[in-house]
Image (cartoon, rainbow, N blue to C red; front, side, top):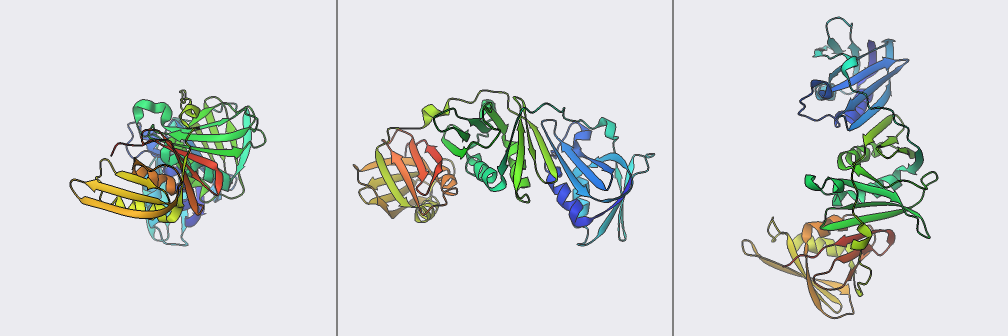
Length: 371
């Protein structure tokens, strides 16, 4: 293998694939990136056995070939080369060493044969559809903060993607950790009708979101019962799905909350952020004292002191008090783009519904806490 490539192009591609590689690996080959050069293209592949990313980049290939080399080491070298540099990669096939030269810099990297590199099986993906980049980014951003990190309930460690068969079918993404729930509805794209309910893992969601940063146009998505594939301009990400049953989230979404509180979203978020400075790291509890046309946020911490702040609010029901985890509220507020937010409440022990007044595609459910 022998090729020359622009440093910026190689760095961008390595950035797309190297984050899949775990820093600590008991299987040496999984620390490597597969470099496969042929026909004016260098294909870079990284995998952790559950997830694989392939990125193609144009290169001046004088001799086709393939080899694997440590992903993070290669990325760090290329990152530290000067802007505008040309990078030459050469592997002679004899001594398991990859030679990288750029200007006066010369690196010799250890290699492992490409035959040892695991390849994710090419399953048939019967369900195929595409989503615009902005819609897929919105779907991820508005739900992923609620993904559970608790490994014991592995079926909550991802976003549940499915199509409803209601009167108005929709493509729905849901995430929950048991304390809060986020749901986003989109019109069903062509080809997605009859989509099976699947759980896309948290790591896969994170890698897809990174690739969306540099993508434009649309993303082609292929799906089976066990795998999902996202195809971008030059990159393809394939991942296994979580083998589990997502809980019946519809039962968690309250329908009879008849007390409506409406507040300026920016002022509300800033006020919560300020008063929560006092709250303890462990509980992050904030008490909402809700009265006609007024919301008072109160925090009382035995270690740090106390804080209160009043926010003007539209509310016409009976006065009530309810407590929430400030961080959970701020996570939701980070996804509210409209001028005002509406909280639909029942009582101090029942889940609360949170919605952007200007966007009915997303809704959030927040469990209260005792304060």
